[in-house]
Length: 192
Image 1: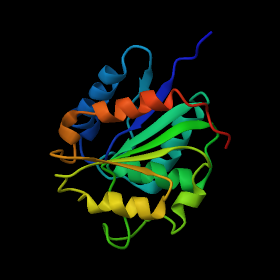
Image 2: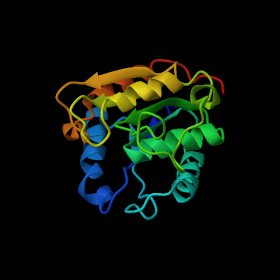
Image 3: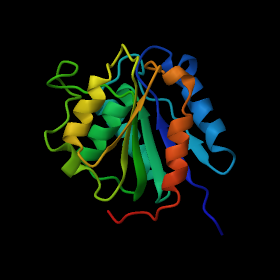
Image 4: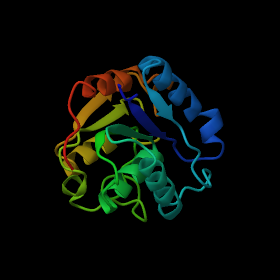
C-alpha cells in the first residue's frame, strides 16, 4: 500500500497572515502538487507576534505527527524558525526535504539578531543527508535576496532557487517549490 507523501507548510508571521496572506501560498502548493499529496497548514500560536519558544514547540509537535519521509517547508519567519528548530533538536521523523521560502536571515548581514539567530554551524546541525532548498524572489523587499545568500553560506549543502520578478509572497505561486518536492519524491528517504 502506497503512503501519501506529506508536506508540512509553516506560515509566516504577522497579524492574520494564516488566513489572509499565506493561505494563498498554501493553496498554490496544494494545487500544484495535486491530489496525491497531503499538505498540512497549521496555524502558529500568536501569529502576530512570533516567538521562537512558542513556534518551535508547535513545529516540533506538527513534525512528530508526520510519517517518515515528509517534507517540511516554511515561509518567511516561519522558515527562519523552522530551520533553527531543526538545528536545535533533531526531528523525531526522517525527513525527505527541508524547504525555506523567502526566509529572512537573522544575524550578521541580515535582520538584527535575537532569538531567531542561527548557530554559526547551522548546516552541520541539520539532519544529515536531507536536501535543503532555499527559494527566494529577486524582488523581495521584506527579506532581500541577499538573505538567501547568507543561508547558503551557513548551509553549504543547500540548493539555491532564485526567482526573477517575484516578491516576498512569490506572487502567490509555489509551482517551483512543488516541482522540487515532486523531484525529491523520486529519491529514497535518507538515514538521519
